[in-house]
Amino acid sequence: VPVNDREAALWFGRAASQGEVVAQYYLGLFYEEGRGLAQNQSIAAEWYQAAATHGHSSAQNNLGLLYDRGRGVPENPETARVWYRHAAEQGNANAQFNLAVMLDAGRGGDRDLAAAARWYLRAAKNGHGGAQYNWGVMLTEGEGVPKDLVAARVWATLATEGGETDVVRSLAAGL
Image (cartoon, rainbow, N blue to C red; front, top):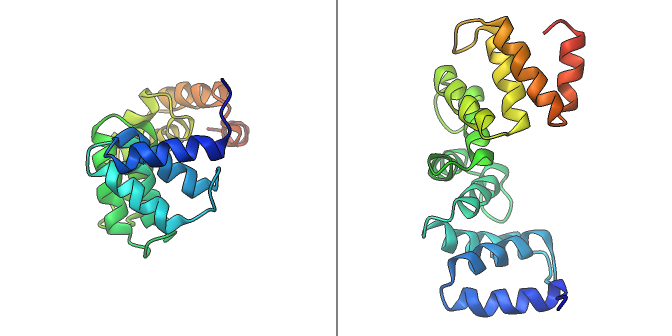
């Protein structure tokens, strides 16, 4: 039976209020995206927080994004990094990538290229196209890892096959 977003949000709301962690995550997502409900980043953050504290990795990553961008909560890169790390350690490829980006830029704490490289690699192995691209760049430039142009080309090819269009420009530039 097809369900519209408004009806789904109602059911997620009922289950979330009873402590159902997956429903809490989806209710946060519905509020964040304005699906079936009025878009409200603050309420999204509350539901993500509820699911995140119970270990839901996608909620942890999304809560990290809200803190990273200051949407619905005060911008706080340190808190964003903490939530990304929780999700990344559970194998969430998006969080692994987000954490790597923060470590790479020194956002939310010290810059750590070696740690960024490790997280890019983990996310790349989990199929994250952006991480495959960034890992290839790190290998090309020898940032945080020894320079390895052969491996860089392999990762760039994987990223391209996954649809990362920036890689095509990099390959043309001599990656």
